[in-house]
Length: 262
Length: 262
Image 1 (tube, chains in turn green, orange):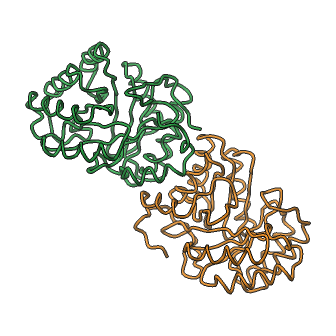
Image 2 (cartoon, chains in turn blue, brown):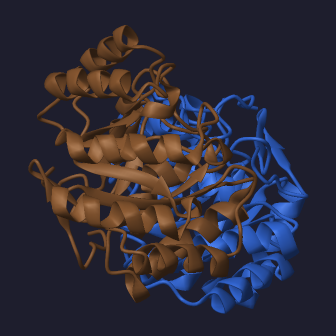
Image 3 (cartoon, one colour):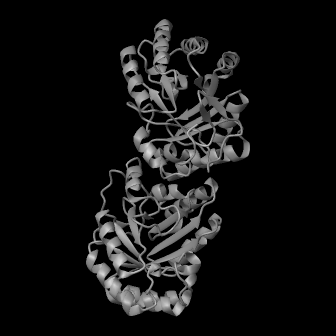
């Protein structure tokens, strides 16, 4: 009832690119106490996966401190697939970090054995991506390569190029997240997702239109090929995220309502 | 936050084509007792408008009996705008009726002073439409001209022609309802709605993709220019209608959530 991915990824029993889109809840915490509180609440909301947005963590430049927080988080949520993300400020990150600091954090995360996926921007550049790509492969960590635009929705040709670039660079999952100003932007994003899934992309896809106008893509994107949607547990990590309970209610109206969850 | 219609229609305080799409609940009853039971339940669900699908009424060929049912319904629900529809069997109607029988029913409804709108298929032909059009105008009844396809979603050019044909024939509201088989069909319908609203249609619009795949258009169509959505009160009148409570929950996630209801 929804278009599945040619290549599917199964992590801890969840199928990315399978019969049902997955719900990911982001954790946006300034310190370890807040992180643990959020983790406890979020686990009770039973998402399919969680994402630690390390760029929201005050002491993230202290790699040892970040590593300790990651260990505690992993111990608390080990039944759930965990995405490690340290978002660049230019693409929505909460603090400006030097490229080498971010690279060191990603390397720490991959080596920790505690994360299942990492998400890094395509704009990080070939050198960074080609450093992380083999590390991910040997550690069994999946690589999400992403493109964000918080200002506008580029044309469908730009979105196609970004997704093709992600697959070519060795992504396990390709992601686009763009700001929608109106219904036309929403349709551009959904068409880009549908075209990617039906014509050229073999890997799983995350396609999101941000902002109030884009909220519908977080609900219904799965029908057009998007495999993961980010919902709000406690704090949102990007504009337009629905609360997880309202999202599930809306999903009861959509075609994958009766599909198995994993 | 949603694209409004150039021409708006206000009936009993509800704005068709205004800041918020309206929710219409259809009544599909075989006899007067069932009709009254449905009317009571439906009024308690507080829709913006109701539609009497007269083609579901067993004794509809007896114009006097249909007129009596209409009077009772009107007395029960006079605070709500009422659409009178006797759908042709070829476009989803529940019984086959001779064209002259349907014409007589529509004439009875317009003359009754008890209906606010009538909905008739474009395929009824020019003669029928041009008979009803002036009657509607002098009685203050709004005319919905509609196109249904229960098999498939035609291309965007066909949908454009149907909407232009409706406006040209003197419709106050133009309607298209097509069966969606996949996400591509859904996008075709939503694009047709967006294009109509932003480029050429001056009157309010109803645009629906039917079936499980199309359910999302019943939730989010308002964002792309559709002004009325049909929900399920007790019985659905077409495939894919959401329950009104679930629809309202889903709407809490969408951009017109804070718009005034009238």
